Image (tube, rainbow, N blue to C red; front, side, top):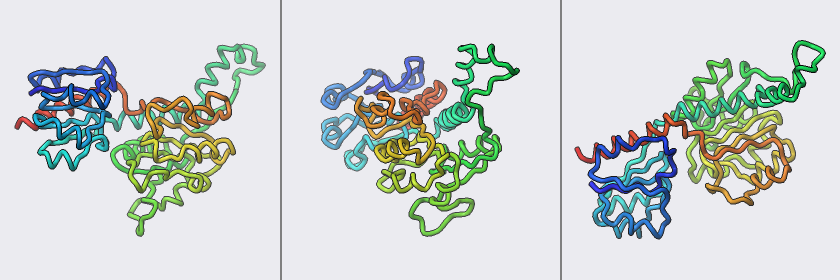
Length: 313
């Protein structure tokens, strides 16, 4: 089966594709692919592998040999699923590969924030400890995770992985019910209550019409002024302009974002502009890498290979 990988550069060059190669007759990889290149590159393909390249109805109709689209991610919004079904093209995504990576990222960021690790290291490099009149130099200090309340919004595999680690640290886990739910399920608490009580809010829900701009000026105002917001889910769940205003006005203490509405973001994105112009110092941004440990990426690729193998059965 002729297979085309449209955007291999979304993965680290350290990742092996041998598991996929073993399932296909020929694998052609492109670092990136623009929309106007898809048809020419895939006209003879039986299988397309795409992470983020869009496959619209118009494109799919022009690929009569296509049998399978393997989405090298969990989200499936980059493929017209109705069109694929009508054309007899199978579409498979991959899930369950990044729990360890994402949950580790969440706690790496939390520990850095509450322990001020970089600050303490810098204090020693700058000679503050060496010149201290006492045996230690406190600097910015540190806080314990034990006893803090962590609010988890989105309690799928990722949310559950975070909850497990939080409990090991002695944190109190608050699981949020859906914002507009009529009933609160067992072991969950109302969305509003979680926002009001949590010291840390971490987002793990999918981006849907109901969750777009879920974190906005009104919901941010419900949170503690000392609270920390972490988003490793999807950028559109947080209203960036509202968050920027909240950070400027100290409505919450700090935000850690691994995702934005547009990726890669433009240089004039309001949050990036505020950071680069030193308008705020209570925001940490990373480049959508929470999912991307080497192990997680390899696991994902191997699961794509499994999806191809299942097509052959």
